[in-house]
Image 1 (tube, rainbow, N blue to C red):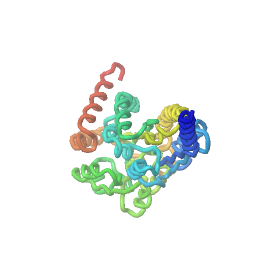
Image 2 (cartoon, one colour):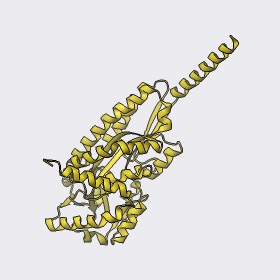
Image 3 (cartoon, helix red, strand yellow):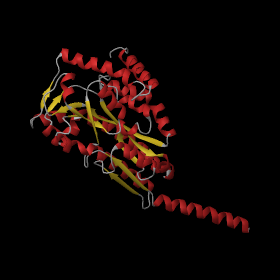
Image 4 (cartoon, rainbow, N blue to C red):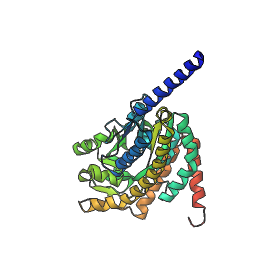
Length: 336
């Protein structure tokens, strides 16, 4: 009887401490997204659902506007437990799992959102398994629009940009090396440095989605936009498995459900915002430059030069080949 009492007491003690830990659990989520933007609001909705399901005194805190540093820094903070999750683009996600770079770092490859969706869904199960093996759970996939080039001076042809200085992600050393090899000048910075750097002339060109250019007011200093869909900005909401495994099953399900919903809404809204943001900026003085057929071919030729340099550096070779295989299959589908 004494042994049984001791076992029951121990079990109750463990259960009590577990419940206390769960009740005091805190999720700290980092992102570069602007405060009060659609992306920020979606993160907050996920948090409300999680907090309700987790119960107790659980807390959910979102740090927008890059207040936790650049995306590479946020990946580091998750690894050491300072953050439990983040909504990041490929720039940060590839710090965790390099194969994900294939969805964003192949310029002019994807011709439509439908093509990107097809490839992502084909690769999604394997990529999410790789993230899980690295200690992260993927809760939602989103995107933020097509990258366009915003510059202080008019530019249409690839060679026009060789006299300019490009914003480049500080963590993407391979990209900077490739740009230099083709005669371009990258200036490694973090997102928070973009506006002051273009205002002072440290950079002349910012590859950016129209929504970000509008929200950050980049277009006021760089009023020329090249209308090409250079590459999609793809992102995902990830959470550390340590945090995931510590929460209640109901809270896990709440995050799964709201995460899928958020991903759908983020993708739909971001795609609408491409044209809406451009129209809003045009009313405020943005000058849009549309390449001619000959100029567009020059850009395609540049992309063809980039692919061999990207394969095996920015994108693992086997993943690079898989993406091209899926793109080919999509384009061979009747009606595509």
